[in-house]
Image (tube, rainbow, N blue to C red):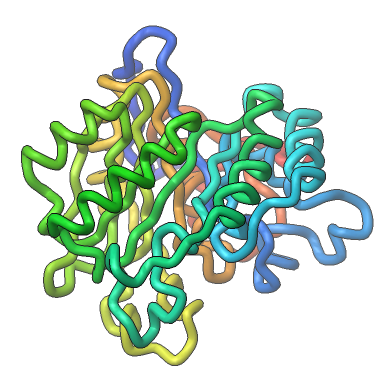
Length: 319
């Protein structure tokens, strides 16, 4: 019988992270209509909460509904309870509400210190929701994601400083997408504030930030948005932007960066945001395999849709 071809997914032969350090790999969000029957079995919600199901397979979920509306404390507690049942080491991260990071009419107006209009009620509700998860010891980080229009200016730096002060009770990550922020001064400032610089993968268009491996706090953060150049700004549907599946060589480049990042951080969060039709889950599981060197559990429904996962799937994956 001929030998099986080598896997295209390079694996770590030795752990490269510091002792007691941990890499958490997962997806941005979990509640997508187009995940039904792909990531999740059809009709899953009738028998099991999606968070409980997904926590079998990933180490972290980045809550993205908190960007659009504040987390209700009872929801935060429920999500923690559901995830902890199946994965005691599981953590959430959460996006900070857009009131603090985007102009309310960002589609037609650039985001800046002058156009962001958060109010004290937004701050109160945001903290209540985040506290509901932090009080369960399951909040790994809070992500403040700014758009590419938020540039490195005096006024914007002052705004960022004030926002960090408001939310300093939480482990903070800041994602900036304009390359004016990628300089030694910014990195020194983040390190002084113990705020993590978010390392991102996105289409390299115009003044977009390029991939980095910065560590400016005890925790480190990586977000993979996909490389859908043609539809990043021009698509009529926002979901088309995230219709991208990373190839094995593309992930291998990020494996190298993640190894370097994790060697300098106590916790490293790696979040795939290319969520269209479950592609984020596919790439997250592939990265788990690359970084661990082991086969990984894969949902049967996802395995049926994406043949690539057959090369890394552990046997008897379905819980």
